[in-house]
Length: 192
Image (cartoon, rainbow, N blue to C red):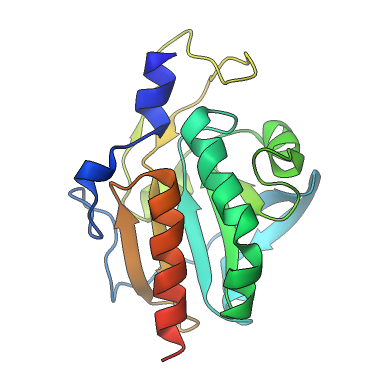
């Protein structure tokens, strides 16, 4: 259990808006990606380019569905979906989970609550295109539901992307709730 907490729950004491890693930064062009995603338990084809045509997009990477911190973050996005929408932005979560698990995660009332879409990056190619580290999970690690985590883990990092495809903010090293709050602030700042 301690390992799961360490995997998904970061200390707010280490909060910073620019990660120490080599993640893409403000002003960089976000890689246009397509992926199979899920919303409210239903799979669909997601295109970042299409989403940006409608306004800013928050792309948040998280380690694994149904882990404590990742469920907290997804739920924080879910309860703030209306505020993001009012600011003109859409949200897409990305992890290395398979779409079958994400179908359940996207519908789970304690996680995405049927309001936040999540995309499958099973091979980690999307995370790597954003210059995020993907590390292997220790054998035997499990989700809060008891399912084995059998995939790599992307760093918890959120990118706020302007409609022109440029990154407006990169958020990392934050608690799940602070990550969401700062993403909302960054989206609201785009309207000024």
